[in-house]
Amino acid sequence: MINNINAINSSLPSPTTAQKADKPGGGFAEQLKEAINSTNEAQLTADQAVEGLHSGQTGNLHEVMISLEKADISMRMFVALRNKAVSAYQEIMKMNV
Image (spheres, helix red, strand yellow):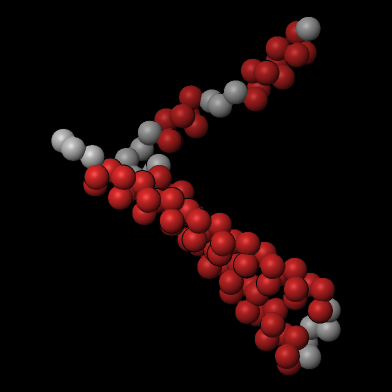
């Protein structure tokens, strides 16, 4: 029983984690920057994999296809996020004040 309580307490966020989230400019904007950076990184990795396949440095077609699919999924997710943000902005602009 005590071990279960200790496990629950250790999984809870510490006050320093919560305080970091309250910093100005660290919320949604930081998450958006991370999403953009990870999408860009996936695209660059896929481009490098394709270039390696064309030059003969990489002979593994499966790895190249996996990196291409990761980049595609990352881009689709980012486009969906952008569409939701634009839709939310449009809904806010339609509100009467």
